[in-house]
Image (cartoon, rainbow, N blue to C red; front, side, top):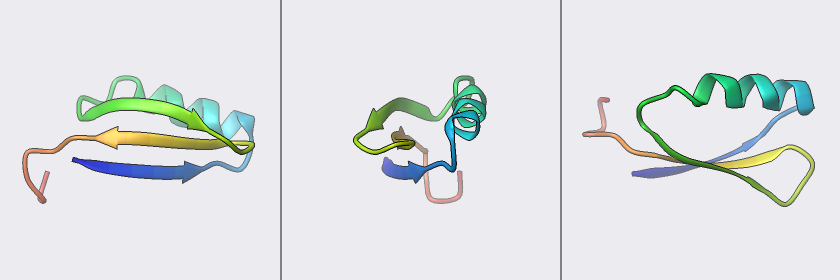
Length: 50
Protein backbone atom coordinates (compact mmCIF):
# COMPACT_ATOMS: atom_id res chain seq x y z
CA UNK A 1 0.00 0.00 0.00
CA UNK A 2 1.27 3.46 -0.80
CA UNK A 3 0.04 7.02 -0.55
CA UNK A 4 0.68 9.30 -3.52
CA UNK A 5 0.44 13.08 -3.15
CA UNK A 6 -0.23 14.94 -6.39
CA UNK A 7 -0.35 18.54 -7.52
CA UNK A 8 -1.78 19.22 -10.97
CA UNK A 9 -1.24 22.34 -13.03
CA UNK A 10 -4.89 23.38 -13.39
CA UNK A 11 -8.49 22.18 -13.11
CA UNK A 12 -8.48 20.62 -16.59
CA UNK A 13 -5.36 18.58 -15.82
CA UNK A 14 -6.94 17.42 -12.56
CA UNK A 15 -10.13 16.40 -14.36
CA UNK A 16 -8.18 14.35 -16.92
CA UNK A 17 -6.12 12.71 -14.20
CA UNK A 18 -9.21 11.80 -12.16
CA UNK A 19 -10.91 10.41 -15.26
CA UNK A 20 -8.00 8.06 -15.91
CA UNK A 21 -7.82 6.88 -12.29
CA UNK A 22 -11.52 6.09 -11.93
CA UNK A 23 -11.10 2.76 -13.70
CA UNK A 24 -7.66 1.89 -12.28
CA UNK A 25 -8.07 -1.40 -10.40
CA UNK A 26 -5.36 -0.72 -7.82
CA UNK A 27 -6.56 2.74 -6.76
CA UNK A 28 -8.42 2.41 -3.47
CA UNK A 29 -9.20 6.04 -2.64
CA UNK A 30 -8.78 9.48 -4.25
CA UNK A 31 -9.43 12.65 -2.29
CA UNK A 32 -8.72 16.35 -2.63
CA UNK A 33 -6.54 18.00 -0.02
CA UNK A 34 -6.04 21.69 0.85
CA UNK A 35 -4.53 23.69 -1.98
CA UNK A 36 -5.62 24.67 -5.47
CA UNK A 37 -5.22 21.39 -7.37
CA UNK A 38 -3.90 18.87 -4.83
CA UNK A 39 -4.91 15.23 -4.50
CA UNK A 40 -4.04 12.32 -2.25
CA UNK A 41 -4.34 8.81 -3.67
CA UNK A 42 -4.19 5.46 -1.87
CA UNK A 43 -2.87 2.72 -4.14
CA UNK A 44 -2.67 -1.00 -3.38
CA UNK A 45 -0.35 -3.52 -5.08
CA UNK A 46 0.38 -7.21 -4.62
CA UNK A 47 4.14 -6.64 -4.57
CA UNK A 48 6.77 -4.06 -5.53
CA UNK A 49 6.73 -5.16 -9.20
CA UNK A 50 3.00 -4.67 -9.78
